[in-house]
Image (cartoon, rainbow, N blue to C red; front, side, top):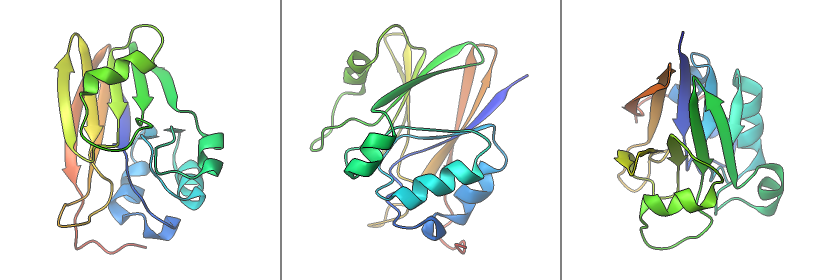
Length: 170
């Protein structure tokens, strides 16, 4: 048996109707939708909650106070014998070393899913795998991306997908 995850972050949409059609379609094919923060509007969270089989999310540094009160700063879930940490660093500013993120979590983790940098990353440091799905929208000449994750018996595979810029949103 395996568990599939749609991993996204930094969507920065204002309304649910703006969320990319491919994201909406993918949500219906996976077991869990995980968002690593920076939704910027409550309507986007409500859409994710209402249309996902299971939704897990944390707040980001660009999220307003209502979202910060609703969602945690960090979240840890267990999937297929993997301890997954989810975070969006609260600080803004220059690039950072992803290994700094481990200090925000209690206990040992297998994987840290994170947002904020808007840059794809799938790399292992000191026994922990770090995965960033990039930004879930296209802007400033940067194509939107998400990650499809498959977890099976303590193993994890990552596939990055570029969102089609020509796709019609609903």
